[in-house]
Image (cartoon, rainbow, N blue to C red):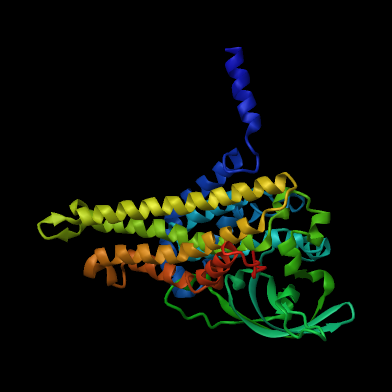
Length: 410
């Protein structure tokens, strides 16, 4: 008995307190599941209002979802990304728009940690629950001035912007030698007092994300409120002087892009749930659809591919976090493959969702069809540049054929 107790205690001590198997992680995932019925109930409201309801954001705060990747010094949990994505998968199963907003907003609490620490002081000193939206497209116009920059521009697709008080905006800092060189790309942190939200979100999928435009006109951004993408690629960020946990040694793009494919993957599980519900009641000739071998085959293949993609993402992040904990660089060739693994999720989900929608017959195209709603959300998610798999496939193929890596967004 003594040896068995000792063995259990040793096993308990071996559990990563920041990992998927930790008690806190299990509590967070259970909270996401518990919120499921309310999230499903509010989906129509989110679509109609073009925003995630405030009640949902409040519940995400209460459950601690926004704290998962936030540094502990600001009351966060600093957990492994696998925990964050597991919560996102569960939320997306019930409301993809809510999962999308959670993913792209809460991941910003990780990015702020790799900025100069003064930026985090600016945002969280008075209220560590303040949220940040983003639009990373390099469309901003930048002037280099004393102490920082002057920033102007109009950015589209700032998801959840109405729930946030700051924004991350993308732009390239020009130099005399290179007016537009993506190696000089930066993320600029701007307070809501310095930008305007333009309500123009009118789409057929992910309507509840409220991904409006943001307009900035000649505002000053101090140097410490910018983050160089090359620092994110090299995993040498100014915030690492304060935030030393292995989590904050991760490559920026690996963390961010998974935030936008997770909602897609979780939506596929939601679509499968809807497909199964249809199969239980729909007649196909003299029999129920659930007894049709074709329907059973589709359900099996969708579930199998869903689990395969989920496990691939967990495996990839397990490997990256292991490298970060060991203080070892993540091999570039692995990062190239991980980026492709993430981007191709949307392609695979669209194809699988299409098969289910077709098999559901004419009932699947009715406006009140849950299966159609999930399909349109998945389809809309494919439009995000991070889910455009072809460039990542071409880069990976080139490297396999002996060429140099041509992508620093890894």
